[in-house]
Length: 89
Image 1 (cartoon, rainbow, N blue to C red):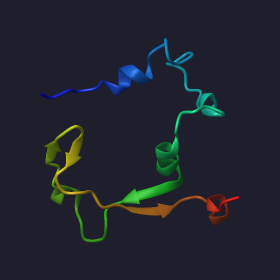
Image 2 (image 1 turned 60 degrees about the vertical axis):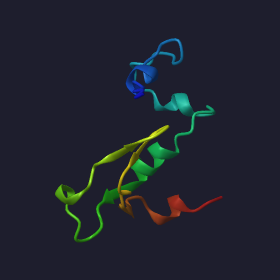
Image 3 (image 1 turned 90 degrees about the vertical axis):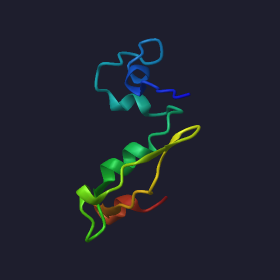
Image 4 (image 1 turned 120 degrees about the vertical axis):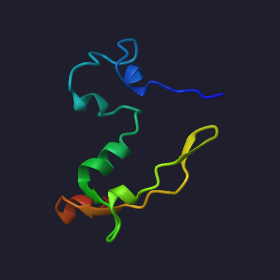
């Protein structure tokens, strides 16, 4: 059995989000929603390791309880913000 979840519909549900079609990132301040992934995307430039071309990636998937890549993706994260912004408290 294959189950697909429409994440776009969930993220735009007015029963869950106040004004879901408006860009309001401040809605997450003090929220229990984990925005770690968004922070990782915002704070780093992402690229493939040296010598790896996008055309060479194996995009095959393995279907289980969730969908896994058959071959794990390796990526290089390069900070794009000043170093002091990455320091902990």
